Image (tube, rainbow, N blue to C red; front, side, top):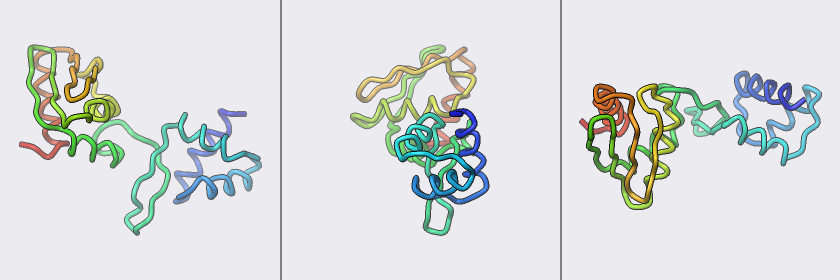
Length: 151
Protein backbone atom coordinates (compact mmCIF):
# COMPACT_ATOMS: atom_id res chain seq x y z
CA UNK A 1 0.00 0.00 0.00
CA UNK A 2 2.76 2.44 1.00
CA UNK A 3 4.83 1.67 -2.11
CA UNK A 4 1.80 2.11 -4.35
CA UNK A 5 0.89 5.40 -2.68
CA UNK A 6 4.44 6.73 -2.95
CA UNK A 7 4.62 5.68 -6.61
CA UNK A 8 1.34 7.57 -7.18
CA UNK A 9 2.80 10.65 -5.42
CA UNK A 10 5.78 10.66 -7.78
CA UNK A 11 3.42 10.27 -10.74
CA UNK A 12 1.23 13.16 -9.52
CA UNK A 13 4.08 15.60 -8.89
CA UNK A 14 5.44 14.82 -12.35
CA UNK A 15 2.05 15.52 -13.97
CA UNK A 16 0.87 18.51 -11.91
CA UNK A 17 2.43 21.55 -10.25
CA UNK A 18 1.52 20.62 -6.67
CA UNK A 19 2.45 23.36 -4.23
CA UNK A 20 1.10 22.17 -0.86
CA UNK A 21 0.45 19.02 1.12
CA UNK A 22 -3.26 19.83 0.97
CA UNK A 23 -3.19 19.88 -2.85
CA UNK A 24 -1.34 16.57 -2.82
CA UNK A 25 -4.00 15.10 -0.50
CA UNK A 26 -6.77 16.22 -2.89
CA UNK A 27 -5.04 14.56 -5.85
CA UNK A 28 -4.40 11.36 -3.85
CA UNK A 29 -8.02 11.21 -2.68
CA UNK A 30 -9.20 11.53 -6.30
CA UNK A 31 -6.98 8.56 -7.11
CA UNK A 32 -8.51 6.47 -4.30
CA UNK A 33 -5.81 6.95 -1.65
CA UNK A 34 -7.36 8.20 1.59
CA UNK A 35 -4.48 9.82 3.48
CA UNK A 36 -3.86 12.02 6.50
CA UNK A 37 -1.58 15.03 6.63
CA UNK A 38 0.86 13.00 8.78
CA UNK A 39 1.03 10.27 6.12
CA UNK A 40 1.70 12.80 3.37
CA UNK A 41 4.36 14.51 5.47
CA UNK A 42 6.08 11.16 6.11
CA UNK A 43 5.88 10.20 2.40
CA UNK A 44 7.39 13.55 1.39
CA UNK A 45 10.28 13.00 3.79
CA UNK A 46 10.84 9.37 2.74
CA UNK A 47 10.70 10.24 -0.97
CA UNK A 48 13.08 13.16 -0.32
CA UNK A 49 10.80 15.54 -2.15
CA UNK A 50 11.80 19.16 -2.30
CA UNK A 51 10.19 22.34 -3.49
CA UNK A 52 11.47 24.06 -6.60
CA UNK A 53 10.48 27.28 -8.29
CA UNK A 54 8.03 27.01 -11.19
CA UNK A 55 9.32 30.28 -12.62
CA UNK A 56 5.91 31.89 -12.12
CA UNK A 57 6.50 33.02 -8.56
CA UNK A 58 5.22 29.72 -7.19
CA UNK A 59 6.81 26.51 -6.00
CA UNK A 60 6.04 22.86 -6.57
CA UNK A 61 7.12 19.51 -5.19
CA UNK A 62 9.84 17.67 -7.12
CA UNK A 63 12.16 14.73 -6.66
CA UNK A 64 15.78 15.48 -5.91
CA UNK A 65 17.94 14.22 -8.77
CA UNK A 66 21.60 13.27 -9.06
CA UNK A 67 24.11 15.74 -10.42
CA UNK A 68 24.20 19.50 -10.66
CA UNK A 69 21.54 19.82 -13.38
CA UNK A 70 18.81 18.33 -11.22
CA UNK A 71 20.17 19.53 -7.91
CA UNK A 72 17.67 21.19 -5.69
CA UNK A 73 18.03 24.94 -5.45
CA UNK A 74 18.36 24.86 -1.67
CA UNK A 75 21.47 22.67 -1.78
CA UNK A 76 23.03 24.77 -4.51
CA UNK A 77 22.41 27.91 -2.48
CA UNK A 78 23.83 26.30 0.69
CA UNK A 79 26.98 25.23 -1.14
CA UNK A 80 27.36 28.63 -2.80
CA UNK A 81 26.78 30.57 0.44
CA UNK A 82 28.62 28.28 2.87
CA UNK A 83 31.75 27.42 0.87
CA UNK A 84 34.92 29.34 1.83
CA UNK A 85 37.90 27.36 0.51
CA UNK A 86 39.31 23.88 0.02
CA UNK A 87 42.59 22.02 -0.07
CA UNK A 88 43.60 18.49 -0.93
CA UNK A 89 45.89 15.94 0.67
CA UNK A 90 46.07 13.15 -1.93
CA UNK A 91 42.64 11.54 -1.82
CA UNK A 92 41.36 13.61 1.08
CA UNK A 93 39.57 16.85 0.31
CA UNK A 94 39.25 19.39 3.12
CA UNK A 95 36.52 21.96 2.56
CA UNK A 96 36.32 25.06 4.77
CA UNK A 97 32.91 26.66 5.28
CA UNK A 98 31.41 29.60 7.10
CA UNK A 99 31.07 28.89 10.81
CA UNK A 100 28.23 26.46 11.52
CA UNK A 101 27.70 25.60 7.84
CA UNK A 102 29.81 22.45 7.47
CA UNK A 103 26.99 19.95 8.02
CA UNK A 104 24.71 21.71 5.52
CA UNK A 105 27.45 21.99 2.89
CA UNK A 106 28.42 18.32 3.45
CA UNK A 107 24.75 17.35 2.95
CA UNK A 108 24.74 19.32 -0.31
CA UNK A 109 27.92 17.57 -1.50
CA UNK A 110 26.52 14.16 -0.50
CA UNK A 111 23.24 14.92 -2.31
CA UNK A 112 25.17 15.35 -5.56
CA UNK A 113 26.20 11.70 -5.35
CA UNK A 114 29.44 12.20 -7.23
CA UNK A 115 30.99 8.79 -7.83
CA UNK A 116 34.43 10.13 -6.91
CA UNK A 117 33.41 10.73 -3.27
CA UNK A 118 33.14 7.80 -0.86
CA UNK A 119 31.74 10.00 1.93
CA UNK A 120 32.01 13.20 3.95
CA UNK A 121 32.46 14.00 7.63
CA UNK A 122 31.53 17.47 8.88
CA UNK A 123 32.41 19.51 11.93
CA UNK A 124 31.46 23.12 12.57
CA UNK A 125 33.35 24.81 9.74
CA UNK A 126 35.36 21.99 8.16
CA UNK A 127 34.44 18.99 6.02
CA UNK A 128 36.65 16.01 5.23
CA UNK A 129 35.69 14.21 2.05
CA UNK A 130 37.17 10.78 1.39
CA UNK A 131 37.79 10.75 -2.37
CA UNK A 132 38.66 7.61 -4.32
CA UNK A 133 41.95 8.90 -5.81
CA UNK A 134 44.15 12.01 -6.04
CA UNK A 135 43.02 12.52 -9.64
CA UNK A 136 39.40 12.30 -8.54
CA UNK A 137 40.10 14.88 -5.82
CA UNK A 138 41.09 17.41 -8.47
CA UNK A 139 37.92 16.62 -10.44
CA UNK A 140 35.77 17.10 -7.33
CA UNK A 141 37.50 20.39 -6.53
CA UNK A 142 36.66 21.65 -10.01
CA UNK A 143 33.02 20.55 -9.64
CA UNK A 144 32.72 22.32 -6.27
CA UNK A 145 34.28 25.49 -7.68
CA UNK A 146 31.76 25.40 -10.52
CA UNK A 147 28.75 24.89 -8.26
CA UNK A 148 29.99 27.45 -5.71
CA UNK A 149 30.57 30.00 -8.48
CA UNK A 150 34.33 30.22 -7.89
CA UNK A 151 37.09 29.96 -10.49
